[in-house]
Amino acid sequence: MEIQTAPPQKNRITLYILIAMVAGIAVGYGLNSHYQGLPDADRNHTLQFFSLLADIFLRLVKMIIAPLVFSTLAVGVARQGSAKAVGRIGGKTLLWFITFAFISLALGMMLVNFFQPGSAMHLALPDAAGEVVAHASLSLKDFISHIFPVSIIDAMAKNEILQVVVFSIFFGVAAAAVGEKGAIVITVLDSVAHIILKVTGYVMNFAPFAVFGAMAAVIGKQGLGILATYSLFMGEFYLGLLLLLLVLLAACFLFVGKRVMTLLRHIREPILLAFSTSSSEAAFPKLMLELERFGCDEKIVSFVLPLGYSFNLDGSMMYMSFASIFIAQCYGIHLDMGTQLSMLLVLMITSKGIAGVPRASLVVIAGTLTTFNIPEAGLALLLGIDPLLDMGRSATNVVGNSVATVAMSKMEGALK
Image (cartoon, rainbow, N blue to C red; front, side, top):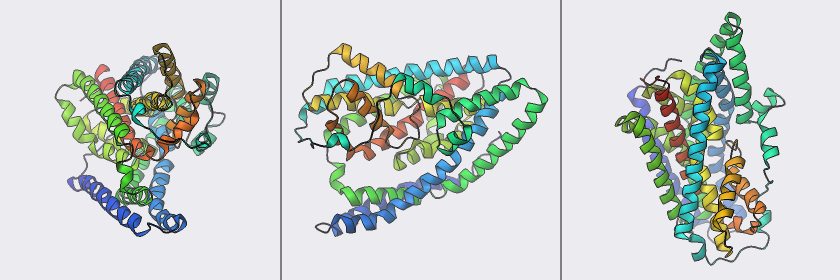
């Protein structure tokens, strides 16, 4: 899939997004001040129109995710030429994902033990906090059975990206195996991918409006105080994300040297988009384009990036270990090293395939708390600030998947 260089004016979208963030905060603050002392129903009635902007944008993005993943991944797999090539690249990719999953989880565990943010939070816990988030304990059996789709149509309708990935791999391998007849289908799918990418360009033009609406709704409801509430926890968590980003960029430097700065320039818009919308999914289509413009092989991008969105959520995984142990600290529950390592293994398994699930990190954390007999009421401590935390971890997920794609392209000798 040949990608043309974007005209300079398209780079203005980054500036528009930044302006929209600032404007959203200002409008949200004004609304919050205006509705002080008035019934919450009045405030919520007004804010729903702002949140609608973000909802529309995310719906449009989700509209294109499944067909884009299927078309690009199936084409990418088929063009590897053989199941052996798919296995080779897939094995390297999964090893990379597992390695950085462990690094992310371990970093979160080390930092939360070092800073002990929970011991400084003397907050009353609501009695019914455990009922705030609907959750289910995610067992290994449930996870494995969930990977395989009953129907690809149902999987695409529900945006079950992991299931779409599995079907796309089977489809791509089979298309390569049948030869000329399969090549015709792959050519059609390649055309479909180009059309979806064009649709993506139209959708991305709506991003600044979505960012404005999302920020206005959050600040309008919570007030600027939400930016200071739990500042200790948030500051330490974002420090952890910074350290994780440095680790990822150091790994990238080993493969591309000083070109890592060029990569950052290419992916700055997807990073900002993921940060401002709290959705790494929102950045997926644009990220594919920018990684190809950077020089990553089209086949590698089409193969590695969709896998990364199901298996390689570095920022989210660091948050899960950090938050789970933080809640235990709030209750004064001591977790020995063996228990914490067991928690990491549980999180390693249950965190896979959560991309696209609303508040997926909270669901996984809730299941982990249940497994280790930690009161679920502590989860209520995170609900108010979770959207702000989600911004950082979504942006980190984008960087992690970008680095993984660049590394795989370099290892395969396919980086321009």
